[in-house]
Image (cartoon, rainbow, N blue to C red; front, side, top):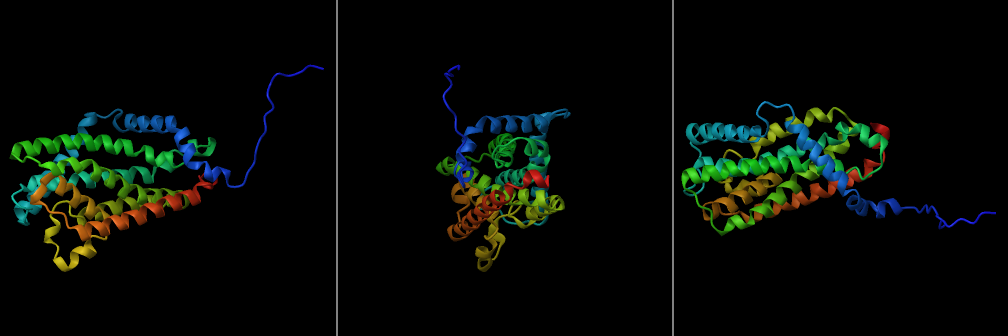
Amino acid sequence: MIASDRPSQRLILEAGRADRQYWIDIWRYRELFFILAWRDVAVRYKQTVIGLAWAFVRPFVTMIVFTVVFGKLARLPTEGDAPYAVLVFAGLLPWTLASSILSDASNSVITNSQLVSKVYFPRIIIPFATVMVALIDFGVSLLILVGVMAWYGVVPDWHILLLPVFVVLAVLVAIGPALWAAAMIVKYRDFRFIIPFVIQVGLYVSPVGFSTKVVPPEWQLLYSVNPVVGVIDGFRWAILGGDSPLYLPGFAVSMLVAAGMLWLGIHTFRRTERGFADLI
């Protein structure tokens, strides 16, 4: 008889243990998060002609179009003495960040179907990893804003110190609907065609190319049900300061809606996550 020096191992099966360990598992799989994030960044700009410069071209051209259409042709008012181009770009930054997260994260589970069907890990890591690509594009666009503000001689005040807070809020506003859409797309593939349409409509109903001050006062609270409105107003307040006062009741409504959408997105994703491998 040969004695073994190996310690005895026991397999413990406990109901609900996986759910309780879920958020701890996300930390344990943090390396996978960074691998997926880096892969998404590499794929975004691989074999492109001008590479990262696309992050400059798209928002810059959009700013010019919106400035000409809304500022020159429609002659919509700016906020305070702020140049209209700065007003537009201050709204375009959070919108581009939120729309990129919604577009990429909502399709992320389907595009990683082989990984989902073969290996266990918290699936919520996949949509969260796509946020890194949007943040890199955001950082590039932020440099354009600095250049535009320098061109017009706009100097921010102390409000600019709170800009990172509104960046986080923009991510949270987008990730909630993105998680819900990612779960729905796994079950119903035609949702993939709805998301681009929602983003296109949202660009025009959100105050990207114009100030929320053009909305009649009696409608501003209802208009703020769109959570992007509060984030855009927050960005403009942080960048333009006193020229763009923050409408606090509307901002509170936007954040409450965003919190509800975030809860719904996480709840829906977690509830349907167990069946992803079978559905894919």
